[in-house]
Image (cartoon, rainbow, N blue to C red):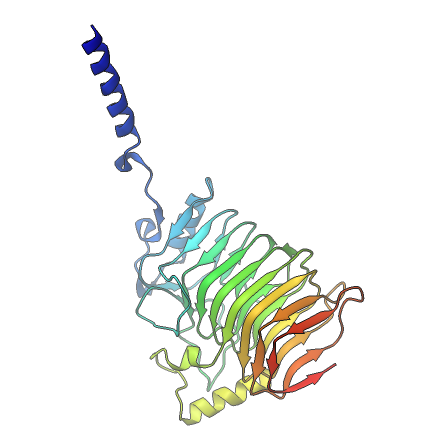
Amino acid sequence: MKRIIFALLVFSLVKGVQAQSPDNINKPINVVEYGARADGKTDDTDAFQKALDAASAKGEAVLIPCGTYLIAGSLTIPQGVTLQGNWQAPHNTALGKGSVLFATGSAGNENGTPLINMTQNSCLKGVTIFYPDQDINNVKPYPWTIQGRGTNCSIIDVTLANPYKAIDFGTYSNELHFIRNVYGQPLKIGIFVDNCTDIGRIENVHFNPNAWSVCGYKNAPRPPSVEWDKFVKYLTENFEGFIFARTDWEYVSNCFVIFPKIGWHFIRGEKRFGNVLITQSGADMTDTGVQVDGSQKHAGLEFNNCQFMGTVVI
């Protein structure tokens, strides 16, 4: 009798283990399984959005396997969902490797729908975003590449090779945004912050024109060349690296910009100015490294261990 009971117990345990075996656990959501082609030519917008929508019920991660995906429309990352590529760190625009998004939507329309729209507790991680039709001889306006709203939006380990306007945490109300390890070269605005009512955090952001020049793609302005000289001239006349309006207790560290018209610009938002603590950051090769239009009266702007190769205008 004892042997029979023991055998039944073992059988029950084994059955329970089998019920929890990997074969029976839901696989991660993958954009390829929702129809993404990853050939750089077929529009994968719908496949990506279907995968993101499927992940919204439980707040799952959506995986982007290595490949080049054409996104001719726009994407919304639902609440609690992570859109995750293969990169574990930003890089110097290695097209053809890792998880690459080719963005082509709303060319010529600066006020169009952003490429990636982030909602509360969403995350974008480990991707390269490239605009294949951008040309320094005929610069095309595009909408924001990434726009966030709500609480706890995160952008981590992302390369933005040549966006027109890169990251927007200012158009809509937001709190506790987190930007870490971003590399690239926007053409008009790098990061814009406004309407932030609680502690935004920005770390390890590097804006450098090499992000576009070394990619190996057509129309890339490579030095030394006439196109490279036009590129640098365009940046010094049009590009602002970091723009801060109303933000309460913004913490910024290890961030850098080169060849901007204005490196760091502190402006008045819709409601008021901001307060920002900046450490180990800087601007290089610019006429105006820092421009301060104003700051909050009770807590202003503080720079620690920073370096600016340019004028400070207050």
